[in-house]
Image (tube, rainbow over all chains, first blue to last red; front, side, top):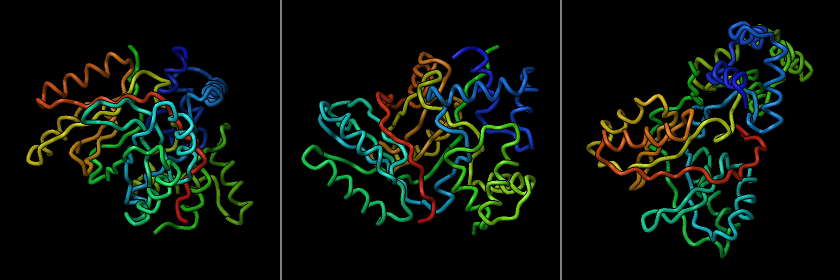
Length: 159
Length: 154
């Protein structure tokens, strides 16, 4: 990723302008041509640095009011296999491995679960419990009580 | 309530939209093949409304965490009577892009994203200093999510 990629990220991270030619608008802002903007975005997509370019839904406002961060304690030597299975479930929107901090934090696998109600989420938790089977040494659900701040990635422009 | 067009736009374009010079014209044409009768301007207006209503946070690229700069998920165990104060301190950092109150002993969870890993650690240190609380720092080590799309109304 070079300086131009960073500039394009900075110019697009808060969203594309809703105009007929959004990439031309970004290009004009950066003083480059719009083909370059599209090419660079495509390259970042191909490399996986950009997951997708699209409408970013706010699940909470769309009625998915029950969102639980589920945290799981699974054996380190099984985490890749289990993480791959968990991450592929349709109701999981994020699935990450994170470090444990013992004794207060024994969980190493995080999965965001979404549903319209807690009953629906509880049903999904049960599916995860069954999937992990004997490898689940414990889990907790952290329901969100309040969204205090939610914005896109903010990368500061380098001066 | 969502209109038929709003639903379709959300469903079809949360996973991606055409990376072409005039994406909204392309989207209008795709929608019209599905039985809609909309113009490029209708698509632009509808996306603007979805954004104004907060149903979408933006239209644009979603960057993979860690591919640019540094980021981490951090948690604090905040005494109930200090929640407003501490949440305000955390949210005030421009490097904090998500901040959630959750039902747990660790009740404040936030994501810190910055140009460098050093800046992330500096923000965490400042938050600890300002709040007097100890942060649980849980950086992502591996991403297992496979993006298959998220059904919005089934």
